[in-house]
Length: 387
Image (tube, rainbow, N blue to C red; front, side, top):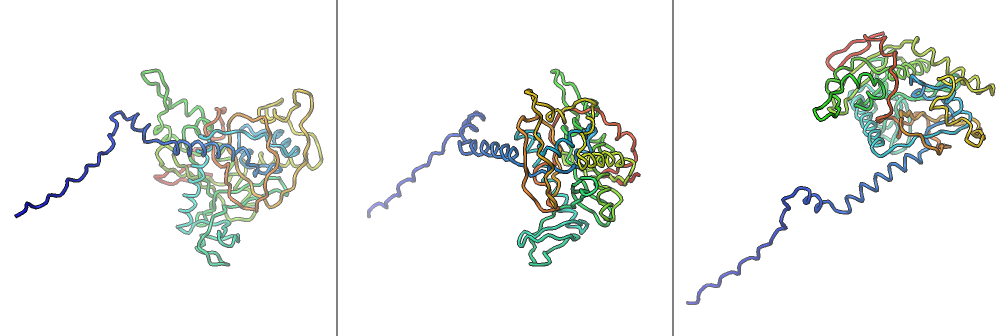
């Protein structure tokens, strides 16, 4: 009897040896495609921001009014010349802005889900826009593909002010503002707070005790309070039934959340409105620009001064762009020498798509506004209201 045939042994597939050195392993696994992808994205985001001219230049933005160093002269010159000396940003700052945009959408979606969100909505199918409270479908085409277009606010005819709030919480009779807060936010808004929570390491380096600094925030930052008061005045002037601003602060480093509720206070907004009225009156009467906030020249109005060859910046005139929404920019960074001119028309109430968030920036002086309202805040653990 013949011996049974034995099967030939299977060929053993030898796997590539895994490098024992982690750096070598990552270098081998990271291909040129991945590196090129990140490089292309970086370039695209930076160039896209440079070319963006959608922000209106013929109105007063609540975001600029809210700054403690707002220069009426710079605002006047921007409107009358139509020239925006746009600041440039690196990829990291723009990435921070986009993170803030996503936080806005997240909290707006949550307010929508619980039926509290009121404002302008748009249909992604038929492109119709309408005012509603937490709708679940388009009233015209019945599509469920909807987007929230926030709360457009305007006093352009009387004060040249145009803006929009992040949302309106109908059951609370409140507007909504969402803020992401990190080390850079505190550095810009309250540098003295940042200095208080710096810790020196044994090697001489300074780091910030982020948990302690976050825990110390008990009221909104002064510029946020001013901005909220401007929005409340605009909303009440429009006839909306709101008497307070709800701030949602979300920590960037651990996603903890705090809520602050601040009631409408005309004493805060009245001086800002007077300045806006003065700017509009000077523009309408073709009068000279108001004085600089520093009395002479500041970094905001300096780009509009005479050039080195003695020629003044050209007057472009006030451009008319009715029914266009404000794109709130909170921007710090090196000034560019190339001013941005022009913008693309948008319909009223369109949410901000580029400039809502603020990255790390230069240190500003302490703002005394935040010292006078210690009873305006409520945290994530409870709720208190202040007037």
